[in-house]
Length: 303
Ligand code: GRG
Image (cartoon, rainbow, N blue to C red; front, side, top):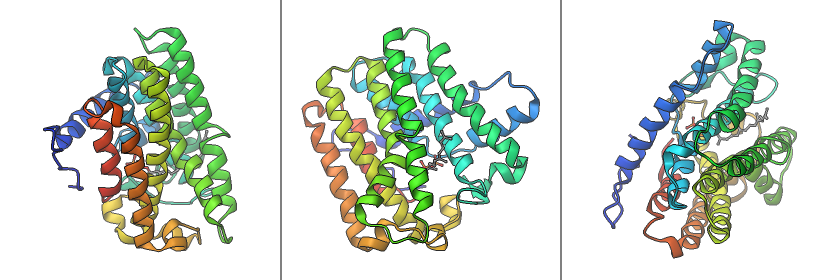
């Protein structure tokens, strides 16, 4: 069990919150697929989507919707969409043309089981289903809010986000990379979708401009912190615990925070970012307990 059992001083039980969130998300994900044809496509989509994972992005989305005063149930289709985009990015990232990995979420990667062509198409189908979830399967949310959600998801998934970050990441293998470039990679490859997770929830919940601005700062900081910790875990944790191949950054000759700054300084950076993220939510202190605890979880997690 990862380090997630802390009960925050106010009586907020983070462990319970996380478990309840995960259950809700798992159920929604399970009901989100179908009726894809042929069956092999649906199987490949389900294989990766329902393979577990921390479900951090959908949980951030639901928590942020509630902080904005919205009903989290209305954000569930978008939360599902975020996990679909994330899963697609993992399937594509594992392909031989990218990170070329054979272990993900504790099981063989999608292309190892279904072949490269089906894995690419299963990722494509998840990406497009994500937008379907928002546009066609989000009853009760005003269309103007959904339009903004579609905008945020497009920016996060495309060239201004994941794709842009991934391209620079791939181009940086075996090359000396400075801290600015590394931050660019982390903020785009990983941070963009975490930021979209927080912002889309807030938009659905009807957040005002002040809260959106604060959440923009919060999510940028936790997004960067998340990837710094990912870099650290790649060095310090085992493949068994991570559910993916440990030590991959070294093998692929990637520049990481530990490589540039060392383990201690990298951890300190991540912790400083989390403090910054929490501080900006001060005006919403009590209602923001879930987001504050999620930020702290990012630096205390062990997988
Ligand atoms: C095709 C539109 C399109 C985009 C794909 C392949 C790609 C572009 C981007 C790669 C993005 C990527 C895989 C970034 C790494 C992000 C990361 C830290 C993943 C691990 O997230 P966790 O720890 O994993 O939340 P779980 O399994 O817990 O969900």
